[in-house]
Length: 301
Ligand SMILES: Cc1cc2nc3c(=O)[nH]c(=O)nc-3n(C[C@H](O)[C@H](O)[C@H](O)COP(=O)(O)O)c2cc1C
Image (cartoon, rainbow, N blue to C red; front, side, top):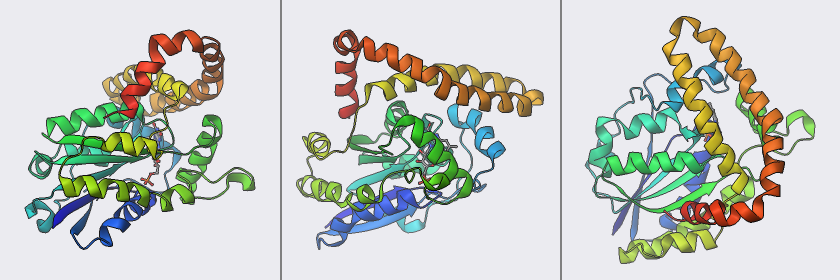
């Protein structure tokens, strides 16, 4: 018997649906015993978000400042799992506050130390540097990353910004203004995520995970896009400055968060298309200097 724990947090239910899909083949296998653990916060975040709450959560998210979580159920704390499948979402290029709070809580080390972990993110599309941060959090807890699946909104970056904002501020996964595509990970990909469960099971049965990540990538688990990683890197540099500025000036917080909101819109719609054209022009050169290595890094574990 192999015991598997599915950890997740989800505001809209998207990551819960993904976890259910991945879990389907485990449920159908008589050698598998599975549990779900939903991370719950003492202070919960609003959903749908108001504009102020959405931007106001930025500094603490980016600086990875944890909040208190409710204790996990006793069964989850007591069971010795053979594999943990860890679902998370990205907030401001960083694992979300609930995920960060769990990973920095007193429960995480006991639950994760010495355990193989498969991470599954469900984000808009900028997950790469958040996954680097996730690796550090897992290492700190003594866990071993054996696989990674990054599910995203596959639409154009400038379109998915509009549609995700509509989703986050309305709470409904709908076609914004009647003609935009639906936001988030597509229904087809969510339902099709059981293929990843099917890939993982034989490795778990053998207890050896060598080759798992390669097989996951061949099945479409990671879609490296050079420009999204480039924006992620630049965004991280700017977010470091903005988050420190806001946290160092609590009395001016409301005004600074208001300016930050306009900065984000300007960076996405004003600066990023110009940088994209420049990087597209330089692509053949940058491929050998940078992108080839990056692709290997993010398709690996
Ligand atoms: C405050 C906030 C910030 C977000 N920032 C990012 C981001 O930097 N990159 C990204 O790809 N998605 C971002 N998203 C989208 C989330 O990763 C996720 O896809 C969405 O919130 C749905 O997750 P759920 O399962 O919790 O409903 C953000 C969402 C929220 C609420």
